Amino acid sequence: LPSPYGEELRFQTNQQRVPSDVLLSRHLAFGPRMSAAHVQGGTAVEMSPTTAGSADSPLASQLEALLAQQVPWQTYTTARLLSAADLQRITRLDKQPAIDQELVLREEGPACAKTFLTVLRNITKEDTVQYTLALLHKVLEADESRAALFHVGADGEAPEPYTPLLKLVQKTDCALTQELAARVLVRVLVARPHEDAPEPRAPAPPQAASSSRAAASPPGPELHPGPIHDVATALIGQLCQQLRTCGAAGSGSARWVVWTLSKLLRDRALRCAFVKANGPPLLVPLLTLSASSPANIQLVYEATFCVWLLSFVPSAVDTLVSAQALPALVEIGKAISKEKVVRMVVLSLKNILDIEGCPYGADMADLKVLKLVVTLRQGNWTDEELVAALDKLEEKLYTSAKEASTFDKYKKEVLSGTMDWTPIHTDMAFWRENVTKFETQNHQVLRVLLKLMEVSNEARTLAVACHDLSQFMQAHPHGKHVVQDLGGKELAMGLMAHPEPEVQKQALLCVQKLMISNWQVFQAA
Image (cartoon, rainbow, N blue to C red):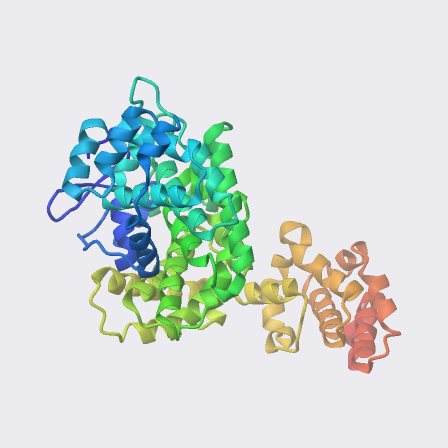
C-alpha cells in the first residue's frame, strides 16, 4: 500500500521498494542485514532479501482462537456506539480473505483506521476489544506500511490514534489486551509523519571523525514537547516497568515487551527517549537467560537485537557496560551457536569498539573477547556479513590491545575501589613512564588513591594505596609537594596506627618519603 509517510528501503538485489518496518519485522526472525551507518542515522538498508516469518507461535494460537469468535457488530450500531458507515467498513474487513481486505484498505484505508479507533474508544467489552486488536494486528502484520493510515485524515482531518491504544497498554488487568495494544501502538507510533525532523545524518568517514565520542555517533533528534513526546514517554515507561517486573526470569510479559522495543528502538528519537528513561540496563538480565530452552534463545536473540540498536548511541553503551552487558554478551557468544544470535553479539561488540575514544578495550581484553572471536571464526558460518564482522572485530581487538597502556589498567583498578599486589605496583619502569599521567584531569587517579586511603575497609587496598603513593613521590620530581597539597600526609600518618602490620609498614614508608628529604640515603642505611 503506497504511503507518503513511512521511510522506504530498497533491496539491492531486485530494486523492490519495501517499507522499513517490514524489513525489520523480517529481521526479527532471521537476523540483521542492515547497514550500520543507516541504522545509526535512523534508516536501514537491507543488504539482501529475506523470507518473512514469525517466531510468535503462542500468540498466533491465541490470535486464531480470538478471530474465530463472532462479534455482534449490528448490536453496537443499534446502541449507537458505531455508525452505519463504521458497521459497513468493519464487516467488509471481518473474516474476509486477505485479497478482499487489501481492496477495502486501498479504497478507504484512512476511514477504516478511523473505524478501528472508534471501536476501541466506544466499546469496553473485553472480548470485542481483544477481537478488534487481533484483527488490527493481523491487518498490520500483513503489511506494516498500513500503520501510516492512522495518520491520514479520512475527511480532511487526521485522527488522534494514540490515546485509545495507550489506555489499553496501561490496562494491567488483562495481559493479552495489553500485549496486543502495545504491538499495534508501537507500529502506529513508528509510522508517524516526520516532516519536522531533520534529514538522517550518516556518520563521518573515519578520516574526518571528530575526537568527541558523542560526535562520532549522534543519538538523533529528541522528541519535541507535545502529544508524541507524551505518548512515547508513557509507552516507554510502561515497557520499562514490565521489564522490571519480569526481571531475569524472562517470564510473563518479557517476550512481547522486547518485541515491542525491537520495533521502537529503530526510530532515532524513540531510541533517545528510551536512553533518557534509563531503559538500556533493564535489557541486561534477559541476556543471562539459560540457553537450554528454544523460547529463551529467541528472547535472548531479540534482546541482543535491541542492544545492537542501542550500540549506536554512546550514552546507551555507557549504561549497558555499567550494567555488565559486556560479560553477558561474551557468555552468549560462548553458549549459543545460533547464527543470528552470534551475529548480534559480534555486531554489538564491534559497534562498541567503533565508538570514537572507546574506553572499553581493556574490559574486552579482560573478558578474553579476542579468544572468543578466534574461536567463532572457526565456525562454518553461511552469512558473509557475520564473517566480515568477525574479521573487523578481530582487527579492532588487536589494535585495541596494542593501544591499551598499562596505565589504563592501573586506572581501572584504582577506580574499582579494590587493589591488589599485581606486578604493576612494584614495576619502577611503569612509574617512570606513566607518572605524568597522574596529573591529568586535575590529578584524578591520585585523588581517588587518597580517597581509598581515607574510606577503604580492606587492609590490602590500604597497603597497596600507601605503597603507590610512595612510588608516585619517588618517580615524580614534585611528588612530595603534590601529595602534601592534597592532604596525603595526614592520611598516611593516620594509617600508621592501623591494626594490620602490612598497612602499618606501607604507611610508615610513605611518611618517611614525605618527611625525609634524602630518603634514598635513609633507605640504604
